[in-house]
Amino acid sequence: MKPGMLKAYIRVIKLAYIFTLKQSMMDAFILFGIFVQPLLIAIMALFILGEQGDGVVIFIVVGSGLTGLWDSVLFQSGSSITRERWTGTLEVLVAMPTPLGVIVFGKNLAFVTQSLGSMIIAYTCASIIFGYPLSVESPSLFIVSIVLTVLSLVCMGLVLATLFVLNPDMQRWSNGLEFPVFILAGFLFPIAILPQWTTPLSYILAPYWAAVALHMSSSGNPDILDISLPWAMMALLGVLYLFLAFWLFKKMLFKARVDATLIGQ
Image (cartoon, rainbow, N blue to C red):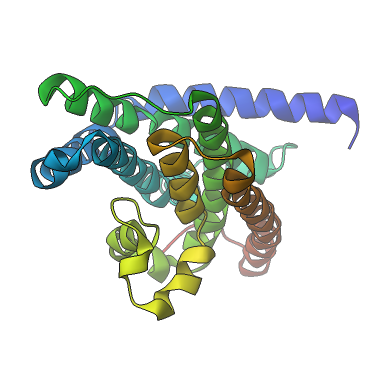
């Protein structure tokens, strides 16, 4: 890739990011998923588990924030292409010189970074409303974990976006994917209490490794070697998601040429 082309792609990602961020701030459904639902989950979990100590409380704060991140990936990133179909703008985006995947990457990046607000809301709830003295044990490791979490979930969102277009029936079942991932990813409790056959399912999910890294860096002071495993898994899964998304984008556009339409069912 030529440097000039890379610079142009970065500019497109930036513009798509800014536009999507402004647009989503006016969407009540998105705001509910980012701010209200994680707050309700945090309040209920704090009432149930809050007396077990500050370590459990910061675990709840991070876990409830992760629920907002996953909701954003599933419902917003997953429908980022479908929404363009509904509004009739997908044809224009496909006809542009910039690859559609670059534009969708910018949109998904906006959705995921915006959903980080859910973690801030949960932290505020625990520290101000309930009065817990909270602190992140390893701030530098926590920041690195946040960055890797965002990038891996953006790549995962690219896969979901193309799958939901290629098979609209999958999107109709998207509500059914919300809470199973909450459980399999161990957002609010360790997966060790789940049946053993579910463990491989957790290992192929970037949200699980994100939860491991964020919980380790927020609740304790892990060795760099210990936290390098979830970091490496997020990076590996992010790359795999990216390659899979690239193949699915090609398949989606080829199918559009064969069917001579980009209009969804």
